[in-house]
Amino acid sequence: MVSANIVKAVPVRFIKNSILPVCNTCVFFEPMVPKSMKAPRCNKFGEKNIITGKITYEVAEYCRQNQNLCGTVGNYYVQNT
Image (tube, rainbow, N blue to C red):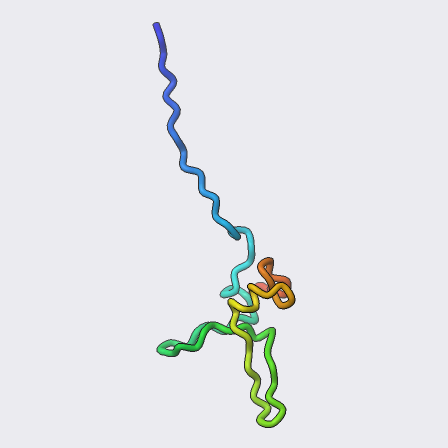
């Protein structure tokens, strides 16, 4: 008697960056304003206008792409509690 072992293929997922922190759970994350074209910002990095005193924060995506700022690994990530 021949027994057939049937091996069921289990899909394996490889999600890039799945173990890295996500900006929207960081204390410095400022979400996009509804009905606005303003991209989500990072309140960790910005520049103050020396005339008006207004602070302009960097776009969160730019901060994550720039290794001198937060970078891909989230160098300055702080969990929002």
